[in-house]
Length: 301
Ligand code: PMP
Image (tube, rainbow, N blue to C red; front, side, top):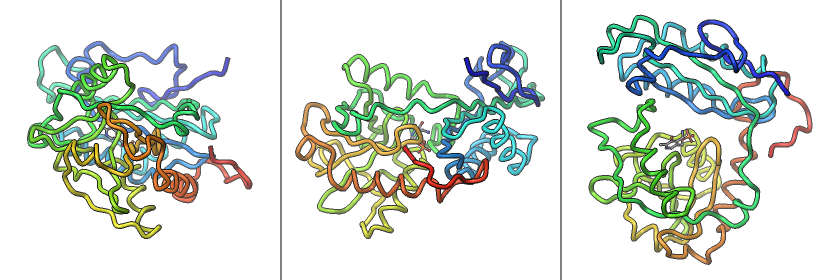
């Protein structure tokens, strides 16, 4: 079995030995921030953007990461190297660290950094061929003025509830609406709809994370000549869209073919969705931070 090394408490430890304190406020209160990052053929995709989002999230909750963004970048790259990975999913967690049982984060002197890099478990290919059936769920997105969706925090209960409701409806993903009934995002992905050739995605103030894949897809779409609008839309707009897809680090771009029992378009992944996925996959290596020397003729899957 391949050995897996995890960065924890200033060193690399084996997965079996990677333990944190039960007094860590990340565990006790979901107090912390995190990132999910992807490595394509030895290139960490848009690492700068992930680092910026991580530090902005931390700054917003007054979590003082001792390492500089440059040092964090190096630690992430080192974790990929240490595990000898070419294609990987990386999880970076910065928790408030150990304190006492009280809520007060000022009693937690040392934030805890955990970096995990794992071989990528690719989503089943048939999912890209058939597309996803999803539902909308009763759980509403946290209001942005209560917990900003721009903060990628360890507080994911809102998203966990959405996932539970999706599973209870026998589907694997669902869309949340915000308190006004506008579509916000999936449990762990952003949503796009395409209508009459125009691409729409909810603005972050509706309650969407500023997804790195979302940004990349908007860039790719503009390069391909699409008009892209960040505009609120409703369930009705989703039902009547020509195409719908979800974006995220793990799933990349995944077509949605049915929502709440309503067929989207022809009920198969749309041509624009496929085109954007293809263009996105062409971009991923070019947009990466190189971990190793780039190999020629590497295949991006
Ligand atoms: N929304 C939520 C709530 C998420 O957890 C994620 C995954 N990080 C996304 C959207 C997609 O963001 P990204 O493209 O940065 O993975």
